[in-house]
Image 1 (cartoon, rainbow, N blue to C red):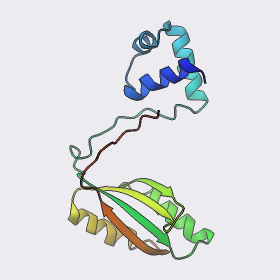
Image 2: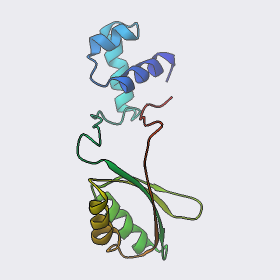
Image 3: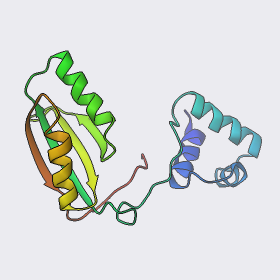
Amino acid sequence: MDAKDRQILRELQRDGRLTNAELAERVNLSPSPCLRRVRNLESAGVIDRYVAIVDREAAGYPVTAFVQVTLARHDRAVVEAFEARVRETPQILTCHLMTGSSDYLLQIVVAGLDAYEAFMRETLHETPGIATINTSFVYGTVKDTVELP
């Protein structure tokens, strides 16, 4: 990747709906070389996908929680079962394998505290192999971006 590719990425991260002509103008390229660079970035896996970023509160998910999960055991069956459950659960936006005192950090969105309680009782508590769960609720956000530097 060169500086022009990084410039293209910066513009697409800011507005993924740019037309190729608009993008080319912003990065000072003609449309054909710009499109070729974008296609190369896509085929190399640098651009993973294009998405709409939805306002959580407007979509009915005003409550965000970060949940630390520690597994009781770390054998393959327990880990695979837990991770499969995470992948199939729409309320879990992100799941990170962590170092430190917990094994996983989950980012969860729900419609309210009652929905969080139901999520805990019906999903996490029913997932075999979990030893501990520790929840922290978000009460404000200072920065929330998906734009890489």
